[in-house]
Length: 496
Ligand SMILES: C[S@@+](CC[C@H](N)C(=O)[O-])C[C@H]1O[C@@H](n2cnc3c(N)ncnc32)[C@H](O)[C@@H]1O
Ligand code: SF4
Ligand code: SF4
Picture 1 (cartoon, rainbow, N blue to C red):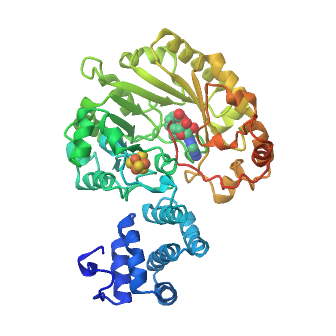
Picture 2 (picture 1 turned 90 degrees about the vertical axis):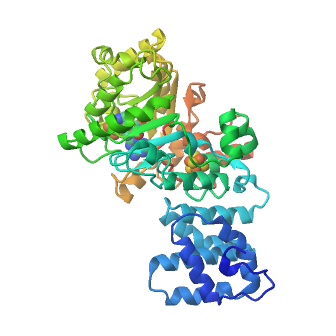
Picture 3 (picture 1 turned 180 degrees about the vertical axis):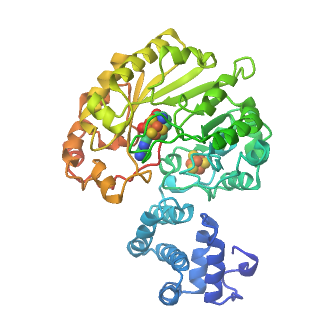
């Protein structure tokens, strides 16, 4: 049994009443994290309290607090699934999961229900798997720092503006997150959003340990403090940008002088030292690297002499990526491992509507320039990025041609998600990939464009909409029908 209060054998009388047990479990769950160790105990709880499910019904009816009600419903759904009543369990948990798409706890409950329904599916068994991300990566946001993409791992490990980078990197929360990887609970991770968990692509611990003596040591000793700094640093604190794309923001933003001074100080005290051990720095998913004075200064300071191991991943709207600007950043020359340019269109009309402030003829020139830089070896890899929505899906195929014309090696497509700039009704209108959308059938048709099967194309979370031409006719029919059998859940912003 799970705790000091409940560590009796299942057969022995429990010192707690059912209400006391429920109160104890609710207090454990109130941290908002997943608690697989609680779900593991449910068979014993049900043996002791066979009336748990009906008792929770009456507790919920009397409970005035919505959070407490939700916790009770989660326990009830786990109890039902443990008893094999999957339909009732999912009927209770799914509405909660839709409402709380960012909650590690609610998504953890859904993950456990699926695991109980499909006991042979190894996706739902995280024991013995190892995710290296929180041991090697840090994402610095405006007021928080994360050990993975913040929309997958919401917990902040500290604030780089006010704390020393070393304390943040190995803060108590950072250590708890790493411990949750070692113990297999992954309790901080959003198990529905994370593609490594949901796609069952996490390495086995044994394989991860083979990578190097460093990883063998971290895994064997279940290390939660990491002596060297992160290998990958994602800088996403400055939202300053020269454009105001409606998908990203409601108005143009530039950091004021006070904010810039704070970032300057943080860069000097924390970011420059933090990057000493890093192999990759990503600038930026928050604004534009060439529009932000802070990022411009930082990129210029990261010289090859001081940071010999460091490579850059640059993501930009490319409006400022002119030959003159490029000449101002010698630190990027020959050290840009990846350049991502967002276009979201293949025509000037659509591009300028979706990328407010951009000018298509300048973009075309700058993309050709980026292609030349790639051909000269100043950039290792040049990729276009296209966020798919109702207004641009007709241009996906042409965008593949455009990528080739400008010398890009890849083009990445992904669904638009709602970053809070659209009302639910507006977002529904944009979400052409939803089966309920009036143009869904046309969207599916356009996804079959042969150009989207070109090796340069990366389909991100749109791969499921491509039918395999050589597949069985019944499969073709399923792909072509307006019901793909699963809802097109919006994914967190990806920077693949
Ligand atoms: C926020 S921008 C920052 C980097 C740079 N300014 C740019 O546009 O490439 C990062 C990426 O997010 C994409 N993006 C913007 N709004 C989005 C949304 N609502 N859903 C998904 N991706 C979005 C952009 O198109 C871009 O590819
Ligand atoms: S959310 Fe996924 S990728 Fe991130 S730390 Fe957890 S398991 Fe790893
Ligand atoms: S260019 Fe990038 S950061 Fe700027 S508004 Fe558009 S999507 Fe956002």
